[in-house]
Amino acid sequence: MNSLFKQLIVSFLGTLFVILTLVACQSQQTTDISPTLSPTSPATPNAQTQATPTPTSRIITRPVAYVDRSLSTNPAQLAPLPYAYAALERAIDADTMKLHHDQHHAAYVNNLNNALEKYPQLQNSSVEALLQDLSSVPQDIRTAVRNNGGGHLNHTIFWQIMSPEGAGQPTAEIAQEINQTFGSFDTFKQQFNEAATSRFGSGWVWLVRDRQGQLQIVSTQNQDNPISEGLYPIMGNDVWEHAYYLKYQNRRAEYLNDWWSVVNWTEVNRRSQASR
Ligand code: MN
Image 1: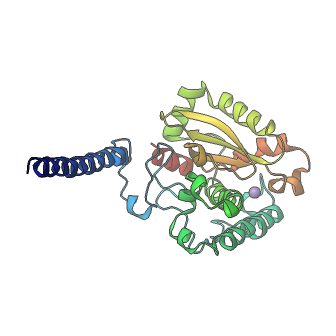
Image 2: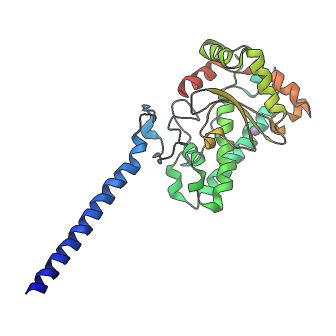
Image 3: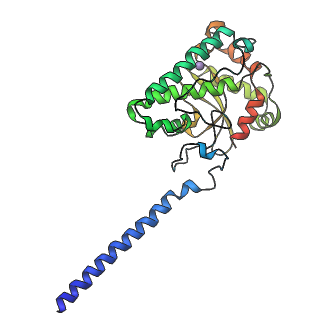
């Protein structure tokens, strides 16, 4: 009788222990996912169009490709240039623009769609979401997504931040912030061009906003986009030879200087505001 009572007590305590452990695990899980709800997550009106954020500080939930929406992969599509091929001729000739947009950018879009064909579930993610969390992209297509998703995003931004109405001098808020951060526009331009000149081989030079909200000049190799490093790209210049070789041949520095005459500061200001 006594030993039966003991057994009952032991099995009751065992069950109680299991229940308490389960409850403790559940509350632990709640604690673990709570950082996704931290006040650092920007509450943009377009947040619902973004891919579901994963709990890492690297994820930028603001739109990146355009200031009001991110780039679809369902399927990825090549948007037309927002101006004529010859519109930027004081810096970039029409032949280069046509080849660059209709062939190079188009190839990145096609190659991205081909890579994602095998993984239809990834087509619910934006290009940005894939690039922000490349480690979660299946390994057999990771490089293809990095290069071609990056190529698609980079060129989408590039066409927008140039305009035939562009001007050599920045305007409005970004002009002030450039002065505050770099001392003057000339210093900024010099540092930006230096970063572009010293980028060995193919790549991009960017003005980004970092996680602390500061402006920074960075360069990336190949078609990498700064969002993979948690940085928001405000403006960027393409320093692949295909961007300038027809007109400038090997004179990258000359291309870099002329390029400022077609920068669309209105769009750069919009992107800078969206990056905050
Ligand atoms: Mn290019």
